[in-house]
Length: 598
Image 1 (tube, rainbow, N blue to C red):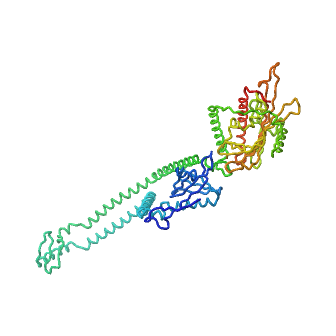
Image 2: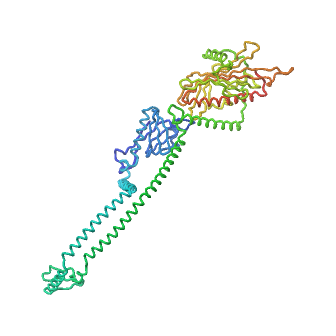
Image 3: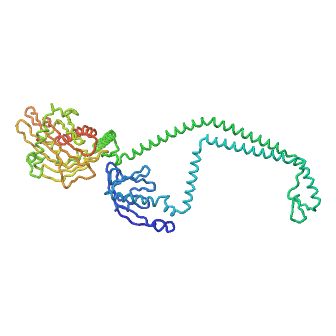
C-alpha cells in the first residue's frame, strides 16, 4: 500500500492544511465472479474515487472499474478479518487485504478521502465558495418548512383554532359596540349646533385668505392655520353612530354565523376524509412494502454470485437453495458438454498400449510400499460380494450397471464409500485400465476436470498427478493431488482370469501445496477389471464379440469444505453413473476395430 501527495483545488479555495490530498495505491484481492473467485488487482484511491486495474503495469491502458466514494458505504466483514465490502447503491465490491492491518489502513484512507472530498464538509464549503453554503442552508430551511406544512396539524386542531379566533372577534365587536354607544350618549345634538355658531363668529374677527384647495389660513400672527373645513350641523346629525354600530354588528354576526356553519360542515366531513386518508395510507404502505421486497429480491439476485453465498460456515444460502444452485450448475455443464461433444472432432492420439509385463512388477520408488499396500487392500475388500451386507444400499440400477452406497459421516463431513459394478462387451480389462490411467487421453473422456498436470513420474506404471475440478457454484472449487498406479495381478488359479487394477490415492508433494483458492479433497479410488472370454464356435478366432469386461469401481472421497451432506450425496448419485457410462463408451470407441490386448 503506497501513498503520495497531490495538489487539489486552488490556493483561494483550499486551506494550506488541506492543500495536499494523499493518493493510495496497492494490491487487493477482488471478488470477480463465482468461476474465477478472488483475483489480485491494483487498486488506486484518488480524488474521492476508487479505481482498479488488472495490474500496476497495465495502468496506462485505463482502469477496469471505479466507484465514487461520496455515497459509498464501507463495511468490514463480520468473520473474515482481511475482507471489507464497498457498496454504492446496487454496486458492491468485495475486497480482501493481505492481513487485518492493511485492511484497517485501506478503510481509514477511504473514509478520509470520503470525508475530505464529500459535499457538506467544511473543506468542501471553502472549496466551492460561501454562496453554496448559503444556498444549501436556504434550501434546507425551505424543505423543512414545506415538510412541516405538509404534516400540519389535524383538522380538529385547526377547527379549534378557528373557534378561538371567532371568540376573539366576538369580544372585539362587543368592545366596539360599547365604544360607539358611549360616544352617542356623551355628545348631545344641541351642543353640535352651539359649537357651529361659535366657529362662524370667530371667523369674522380675523382676515383670511383662501387657498386654491379651499382651506383657510389665519393671518393674525402667521403661526396658526385651520387645515380642515368645519363640519356642518346637518352633516354631524346625519351620522347615526348607534345605527352604524348595530349594522356592523349584524354584518359580523352574519359572517360569524356562516363561519360557524362551515366549521360544523367540516367537522361532519372530517370523519369521511379521515377514512379516505387511512385507506390511501394503507395503499401507500402496501406499495412501499412491495417495492422494498422487490428491491431486496433484485439485490439478492444481483449479488447471489457474491462470496457471502458460496460454500462456507457462514454462508447466507440455506441447504435447499444450495442444492438447487448445484443442480442448476450441473445442468448447465451437461448442456455445454453435449454441445461441445457434437461440435468437437476427436483428434487421433497415439496412445499405444504397452505389454502387460511392465505392469506386473512391484516398483522401487519411495511410494512403492504404499502402492503395494493399497493394491492388496483393494484386492481383498473391493472385490467382495455385497450380497447379504446390509450396510451397502443399492441406489441405482441401469442394465448391467449397479451402484451401491454406504452412508458414513465423520465430523459432519460425508465420506460415503461408493461401489459400482458394470459389464462391458468388446473390451478387455487391460484396455479399460490403460485408458483410465493414461494421462495423455484424460481430457478426452473426463469432463469434470478444469486442468491437470503430472507433478512427478515415479516409474513406468506410477505417476503423481495434480488436477483441479470445474467449480459447481456455490460449492467451492476442489483440487486433488494423488498417486496413480496401474498393476496387473496374475490369477492364482489357472481357471480364474487375471486382474487389472488402477488405484489412485492422495499423497503430499512439495511442488503442489494446498492453496486458498481451492479446497483440497482426499481420495482413494480403484478401477478393478477382469476379462471373461467365451469360446468361439468351431475354429474361429477370438473376436471382440467373445470378450466381456467385468468392472468394479470403488471410490472413497473426503470432499473437505462445508458442503451440505444432502448435496454431496445427491451429486454422487447423479455423477458417478454418468462418469462410468461415459468412460466405458469412450473405451469401446477407442478399441473398435483394433487388435485385442489381454
